[in-house]
Length: 342
Ligand SMILES: C[S@@+](CC[C@H](N)C(=O)[O-])C[C@H]1O[C@@H](n2cnc3c(N)ncnc32)[C@H](O)[C@@H]1O
Image 1 (cartoon, rainbow, N blue to C red):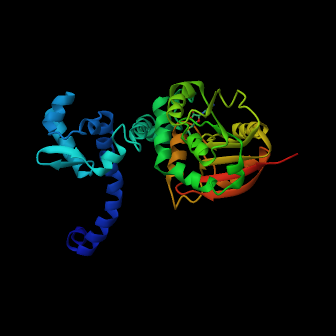
Image 2: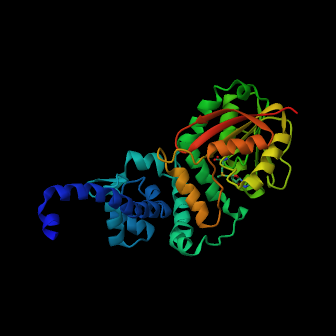
Image 3: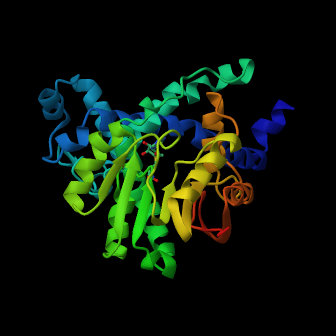
């Protein structure tokens, strides 16, 4: 039998290509640690001015040999390039990894690292003993988390959502729009660009509004109103023509429907709910929602991510009629629903 493995060249080729797929997945971890360490230690910012690895190490107080090895690994990943003996940034790192870049992804990378360490590393424990206990409270929504959400949005989902909404006349005509759980406020800023006559309100937790939203919104547009509270307990205002809610409603049915009813009450007659969330639909086309759901489940959050047809049923139970569902790519769908007039 061993002779077959060693001397049959065809069996070697087919094994290599299959194992390649597995090993690529396994090795993604190493690349991730190179990337996230470089972000955490602000190596990209430090190399805005090209440096040798020793100059970089001395400037930042790093170990020289380790710095050189890390720079070499980063170069192999197209994160750095070497000119003579100096390391410099590539187009990729310039665009996404400099902390002042408009498309900076550093907070998102830090959040992924935190999630991997706090949750994914416990997958084996959860498999053996059931979900682990991680307190689920609003403390998770800190400044870095909210910035991470903004960084994710600006890299595609914001633009794809706007593409759908700008075709939607009732949205364009809306006078008063609520961005519920709007966090970074980038969707609200985009709404005021799309419809300069609308009044847009961002509602979020007090620590988010005070710690992040105020700052971002004031830089981009002073016209946006800010409202703070806990959407599960507090009033969210009224008289809205549109309530937009993106990546906020990952909840079990029992707590989701009352929130949808609250949104319904806050809308004018004929007003619109516009929801944008990950849905567990065609997981063969995109696995992101599947992993997102598994990540929640590790820490006991079961049934938080729903298939879009089930989510539409919840929306209708909240007093709406679903009028449009659009796949905006990746695992996300935009669902538009009209308040049913009783
Ligand atoms: C995943 S982020 C989504 C942010 C933004 N809507 C987006 O799509 O990028 C969830 C947002 O909901 C807010 N949020 C979560 N629970 C909330 C609550 N109970 N009351 C108010 N806001 C809440 C968070 O602070 C955060 O800004």
